[in-house]
Length: 307
Ligand SMILES: NC(=O)c1ccc[n+]([C@@H]2O[C@H](COP(=O)([O-])OP(=O)(O)OC[C@H]3O[C@@H](n4cnc5c(N)ncnc54)[C@H](OP(=O)(O)O)[C@@H]3O)[C@@H](O)[C@H]2O)c1
Image (cartoon, rainbow, N blue to C red; front, side, top):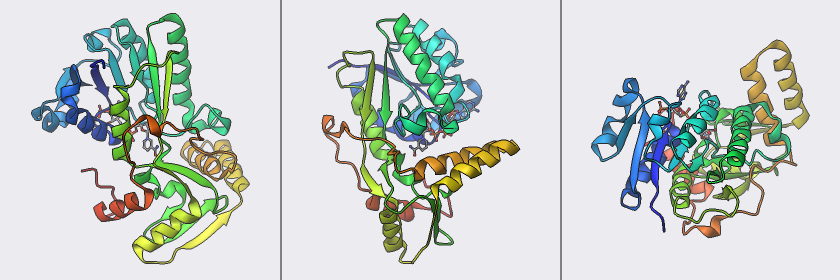
């Protein structure tokens, strides 16, 4: 088993927090482990640095920042995702031969995900990875596809209001969606570092906590909160029309939100269709009802508790 030398980008974010902690737990299995950040952001990482995480200071687009690492895990959020092609160029120039792009969600190589506005910058990154792999035969990249995070299942964008106890969905109650708890996402990611490379330069791990119908999810929430919800199921086409209307008015946030709702309600689209790769890992994922119990238990005000 090889011992990778791993550089993390976007460690201060939601995914980054869990993945950094999981990497640190596995520190002895890694040749080197560091977070790439800049001097201005360094203080954000003082706690984890004190617990043994190396901090590398430098710009994301300079090969100098990547010297000495073979693996980069990028966890940038939606607003910074467009920086990934420049990061890949710099990393490969410095000798990085394994890149995990910021994915951690649905399989965007299928159906409506290919053209949905929400995933545009992820698609640009994917195309860049393919081109880079053609030019550099020793370069590999890995997609970790986990479906939605269990902790995000009740986000208002998916139609749930956990204060007003309402659920509004542009589709039918039997529409299914895959969900995985963020702690399991970070475990799968770190364990994948030690699995064999694929014979092709692209490797994918489709690892899912479970597939759940929205009607069943709201039943779980009702049991946990001990309250009945008002369920409203609207035609999926209404979300498609609302997204188009927002686009016409130049309302980008509205367009993104409704295009995502339309995708969620479309019965042809299952975020990560089978086959899944769970059996390649010795990990028992948490079921959604347990994740949601934890979510409500950890919730402070309306914020998700990260610690
Ligand atoms: N499947 C799901 O349900 C789900 C849910 C959430 C996220 N995700 C995916 O997970 C990935 C990470 O998302 P996230 O929610 O963890 O991201 P996030 O918390 O919004 O941001 C992650 C990090 O990106 C960097 N960043 C953000 N905006 C930036 C900017 N304008 N300039 C420079 N850096 C910036 C910051 O890095 P530093 O900390 O280093 O400053 C930030 O901590 C994304 O691919 C996202 O789509 C999936």
